[in-house]
Amino acid sequence: MADNGPSGLDGVGIKQVDLTNWYIGEVAATQGIADTKELLLELKLVRTVIGHLIKREGTLVVIQEADEHVARLLDAVTAEAEAAAAAAAEEGDEEAVAAAARTAAAAKERKRVVDNRVLAVNPNFVFES
Image (cartoon, rainbow, N blue to C red; front, top):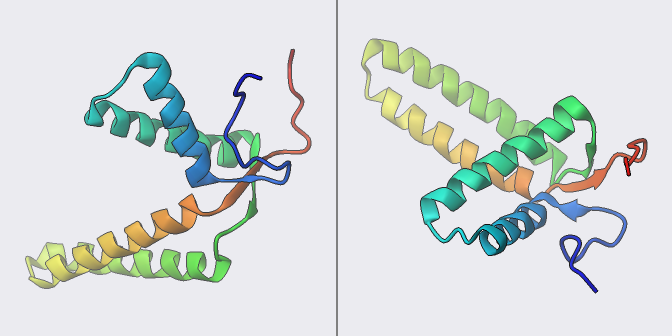
């Protein structure tokens, strides 16, 4: 039987990190990509495409956030840290360095939350033959 998709797809959904890992593995195997930079570019592209399929196309839907409370909190912390970094950078303050570090830490945690959300194909999506 041919491998048509990521394993662990039980009809309910799949974690975004599992979907991206499956795709990167397929790309590496079929296109023979072994260069780390090329794989990182492909990873960035697939994350962008998944975001587009969720936000713009509606082909994919998030059926479960990893932790909605944490996601909302991280959004608020990231926005606050970005504003503080911008204000401190204008003043040339060393606070800019600390604010940038807080922003980076919040962005890293946000990525973890996004990677652990569960995705599924929109039930209203019509597959074309």
